[in-house]
Length: 212
Image (tube, rainbow, N blue to C red):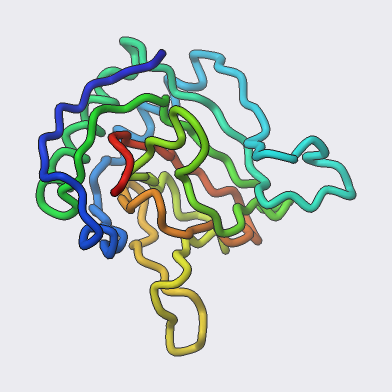
């Protein structure tokens, strides 16, 4: 079992904390760090898989109407990526202490490197990250790292948090490489279809006792 201890100490969760919105940290990762991470992933020859959800057995077929169209690569918790996980822990510690104040226990899942292909209309329909059994049932804070901006579409959206003047869902993050967006795992969110180019990102979840 993967168990990277975060050591976040906080107040007991209460219903008032569940109103928190996404929180973005711009330039959390530098261009050099993004390149370093992606190059090591390539050298590691880690297998890329379709990022499936339950019921996605027909991914990629002409009849597929999946809620998710993307490809994923797990980032193993090994020495080559120790700096990355250490930085994630520091970031979530600071954001949790200042913004969410959730009771967190650790990180029980590997981060996932995601590729959304514009030629396939890569997307992820609105969904929640938490639910089910261990470890997904213990997800409390989700995060997305934006790795590039040379694509069209592929917006990270959150439903139920208001609308733009034109009626589009509110987009809560700067679309700049290196930005990391934190949000409570119970928020309904998604990625709109990529219409041109390829969108790259990294998602991570931080775990703790269930909300009360």
